[in-house]
Length: 408
Image (spheres, rainbow, N blue to C red):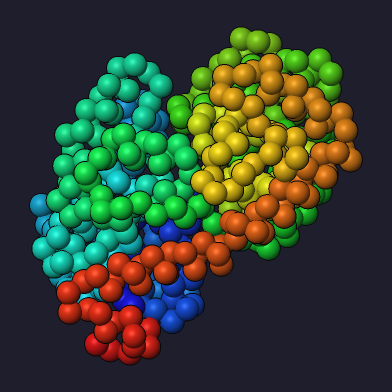
């Protein structure tokens, strides 16, 4: 197949969406398919490059200023009057059998969706982020944007949408009804070998923590994952384990958690590292006693990578977070419901107090990831879905039967 991967976010930019789309694109190419990545320009990254078997084209983009309206995140858009034509020329030259889009509210998704409709090309859309904000004003604005901007565009070309977890399924069904042909459940995929290669000594040096227990929290701090609950649980944890330190490996776009820590008088126990190189994450995981990541709804890449590394995970979430995969509190993960600060503190204390039991939970979490969430398994599911979509395009049925790189 000829697969066009479209995502405004792509390495060297960091982030879960960027890294997953890169891993899938490289995986598609490794399986013998032709892959074109279309993304937005970022920093000093070359406009065009070929590596790891994939061709990457970065279109000129504008970085929006960081605001609470933008979920306190830096967003880059390639939108300009020439975008539809430039993208059309690029994709016409590539002749994709299917388009794999990432991010429902990005301009490259909208432009490639319009192209898919004109050319009759099926599209698969991975929705990584819910368009939500805890502030009441922004919450209503985002609902309006979903209703007036995102959903109408999806209805025009009706992609198949990847459902990564139960929260995302509920969100998609609520916000985008009629805007997709169907839903397919494919969880986030991780590479266990990569996260297990860390050096604990180097991780402690990166964290600035010599010997104390490390509560690691991986991922950017944004309103949807603000870590405030984790901070509010910390005083009870420090009362039992005064040497423990919370290390945040991610850029703090939304600093409510740091302000709350100062208000509670525990700022000394919180170490925000800022944006951390991807290569440093395995070292931090090797040094971590426990990982506590997304304090909003849902469990994503960072949680699964911590589990893959054998690090016990404590957090808020649903035991049915991953459709078809049952999580067990106290067995392969430590979970309580959203807003339960006391329960979060109790689970952190339990992990820090009993290293042997914590290692056992970490080991079972690791086995769970190997059974359901490895990148190879997720890659298989994506390719089967893409092949099924490509077969639905009139006149393209033969594309599935020929060798992946055999010309049509």
